Image 1 (cartoon, rainbow, N blue to C red):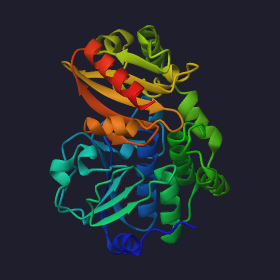
Image 2: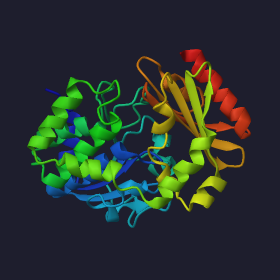
Image 3: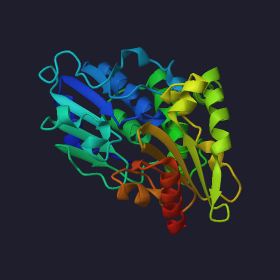
Length: 322
C-alpha cells in the first residue's frame, strides 16, 4: 500500500483555499490530475482554483470541469492572499510550471513522479516509481477520506492511460494495472477515456498530421526518427498547438525506431523538442542537458538553431545513448 507523507495530509487538512497548477504545455496526466485534485479538494470543503499557463490540447476540451481552468500568465483574482496553499503537480522544478515568478516564496506542496525533482516545496512527495501522478493521487485521496465519484475516478484513469501510452510503455507496471483496476471498480469509464483520446480529433489535427508526415526522417540505420512542425504548418492546417497532441506516436511507431524527436517551432530558431524512446533508452538524460526533463521514455526540452541544425543535433544526441 502506498502511503502519502503525514506532513502532506496535515497541510491539506489544515488548508482552506488552494491554488493547483501543473507543467507548461499540459498533457493528459497534468490535466487529469489537476481536475481530479480540484474535485477531491472541493469534496473536502476546500476552495480551489486551477491555474495553468498554457491551453489544453483540443482532445481534452470536454473533460469534466475543464471550463473552470484559469489560463495564462495573469494571476487569478485574489492571488496570492486568497490562497494559503499551492499544489504543484508533475513539476520537477518550479520553473516547469512556467509561473515561477508568481509562486516563489509561497507554501508549495510538491507532488511529482519525475526523475530529478528539486524538492522545492515546503512538503515534497516524489515517487519516481509511480507510473503516473494519478496513481499517487488515488492513494492520497483515499487517505484523506475522499470517496471517488465517476468523474474523478475517470480523470485519474485518464492520467494512467496517457502516461503509460495506453499501457504500452515500460512504466505499465503492476502498479499501473492495480491502480487502473481500482479506479474502474470506483466507477471510472475506460470507454470515455478512449473516446477522449482516440475518437475526438478535430479535422485540423488530421490536416496537421498530413503536414508532419512528409517531414519524418530516419537516422542511424533507422534507429532514430525525427519530425518537424513549423508555424507555417499550423497555419496551413488551421491548427492550434493543442492539435499536435499524440502526433509523436507516428514516427515512434516505425519498426526499428528506438528514439524519437518531434521538433515544434516556438519562435525564431527556437524549437520545443518532444522526446520518446523504448525500453532502457533514457531520453531524460538528453533533455536534462538542455534544461528540460521528464521520464526515461518521455521527456522534453528547448533547442536553438535552424531546423536542419537542430534536427541533426538532437538525432546525434539520441544515437549516442542507444
